[in-house]
Image 1 (cartoon, rainbow, N blue to C red):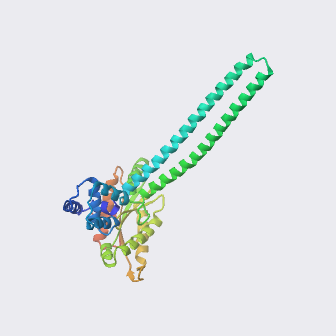
Image 2 (cartoon, one colour):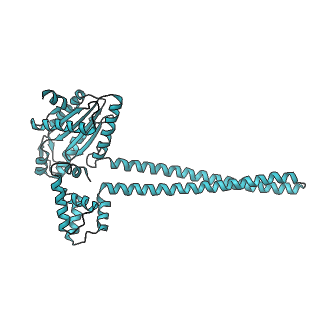
Image 3 (cartoon, rainbow, N blue to C red):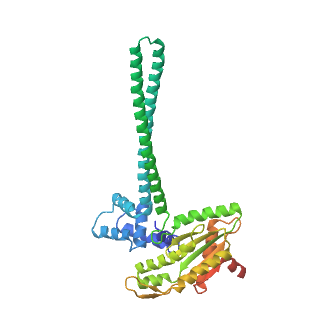
Amino acid sequence: MSGDIETKLRGPGAYVLARQAMDAMEAHQVWPTAVNFELWTHYVGEPDSALSREIARLLSAGEAFTDTVADELAAAFLPKAKLNDQIRDAGDALTKELDAVSRAIQSAQKSSEAYGQTLAGASKSLADMEEPADLRTMVDNLSVATKRVQRENKSLEQRLSESTSEVTKLREHLEQVRRDATTDGLTNLANRKAFDEELARACADAEADGLSLTLAVIDIDHFKNFNDTWGHQTGDQVIRYVASVIGRVGAPPRFAARYGGEEFALIFPRESAEIAAVVLEEIREEVSSRMLKRRSTNDDLGAITVSAGLAEMRRGETAHSLMERSDSALYVSKRSGRNRVTSAETVQTAA
């Protein structure tokens, strides 16, 4: 599922959204399989998406929502299904390439064995040879066998060279698939899946090395009102703008991700909460200082603001606990008037 849907399914309205999807499937006599549930959750949760429009078109045309239709929709619109297809295709191509190399090597081995037998026979014949004509015949035979092996070796070298090139291309393709699977399509930041994996890895490294690790979550203030007023396309422009600001300061070794919807996350390996707070203040000030305009009409959209919460990892703390404390700090920023940065450590000290 997309990051927005995954976020909704982990929020207060998750059960409402799930029931709406089930009710919609029942109303259209669609079996509640795992694939159908994911498709119909998108349908009711993201009514403006390309997938929702396609389902609406099928329903209005009176077409039956069969398993075949569901599989086709999943392959076309669901990121996980696309990823599986791409990995499968690349895997099939790699298997074929390795099979071809294996056949080429087996052929070369047979030629080498035959050549060895020819040499062994020649060695034996030399001991029994009496006439010059016999020697010439043997030399001719050895020459023919040598040329045959040379051709086989040259063919093998060419095949191995081609295969090396093909495997390199496949490796690059799989790497691109991996990047696509872990990148948010709207912002080009890391997506929720990549963030979850990176946070777990960063926490494990920090625990093992005894070094600092700080996590921050950032949210666009009043984004729903902005979206409702100006529309989703303009809302997407705002998300991309905020992401560009976060991405500039979130370059490696830091790690910036779109956590879902209008929420972002920043991992600060080997950096304290004090350092991270300074960076977040820079982000907050830059975002709020710019007066935005609507691209299509050049209308003034005014300024937007962001709120942030951060927490520094404690010894023995899990990634889940660190995320919860960062979220709690973000909620304090929201309740305190927004457009501010709050540290979980500061909140705890005040409490």
